[in-house]
Image (cartoon, rainbow, N blue to C red; front, side):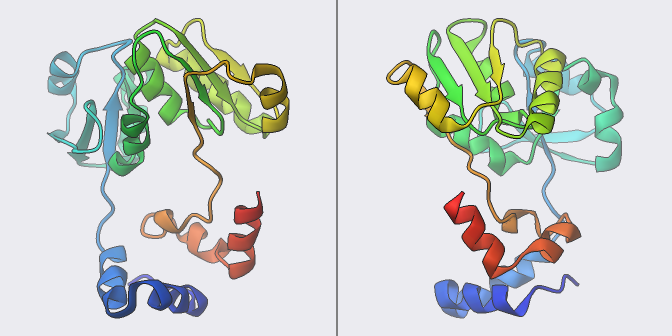
Length: 210
């Protein structure tokens, strides 16, 4: 049973009212696990039969799939190392669906590390247009670059700049901009106990300012 901070529960009740207890019960469910297929490396119909997992289509993104099995082993699978898919919670894939990337678009992923959404965007672009992936924290930008290489994203840009610098030099350049802003991590509660330990009202306010 997951133990949640009292302040968090109070915040929930202010928003959800009578539905709060049901929400807390769902937090105690097993987390969903998913992958997104990278069409720069493989098509879903050829990749999925090669995986030792039972998969089913996710409603959030055309190439996103729920899977069952040992989540600890998926990152060690050879096709993961080859960049044929990215381990990604299915609901996280919805942002790129809403972005509605078209072939030939110039797209900025402003808060891009570790790179799951950038990989999706590159898959949608299919080698056309331009993908620019930015991450302010340099150590995370290195992880982003590593995933660029693994996923086979060619002709893209990885930068580590404050948004103000990009706005000054590239105003009006991009067709689409994705901002997956740093957040308080509440969506990670049921699969990461550290996210619960780090939660506080002060942290939420700091994330809002950032």
